[in-house]
Length: 160
Ligand SMILES: [Zn+2]
Image 1 (tube, helix red, strand yellow):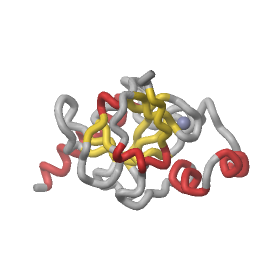
Image 2 (spheres, rainbow, N blue to C red):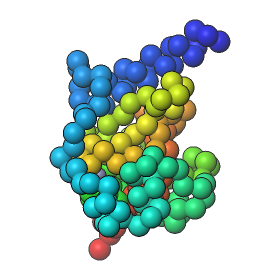
Image 3 (tube, rainbow, N blue to C red):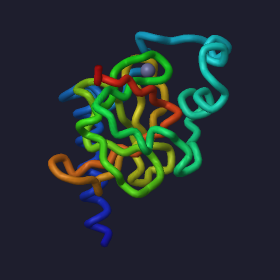
């Protein structure tokens, strides 16, 4: 069991390095292209968006209207508008949070959270906003499950 745990953690460590800037970069960027003060974020976001994106909060399960969103489109960062996930990678995980098996290339950064468990935080690459966590029990082809707070996302409908 110990070996299993370590193997999974190592796998996620490798993934974190890959997603946070490619080979040789294991730490997430400390500065972001969009970097507002807390006061400015409070002004721009709803209180729930602020709690999730800027304070690392988690919305209650089954709270997000995006759970039932089935249209083709893009899920963008509610903080800065960066396209994060495509509807083509969305799936129903049954967890109560919008779930995806792959982010848009280069859109998110990851690092292990302070608990050192297998939860890995997923952040918007452009504004550093907290989105959710990634787990390794997702569907094919990646086997990953990006468990994302709907409050951190904004859906853009591609359908005419
Ligand atoms: Zn963002």
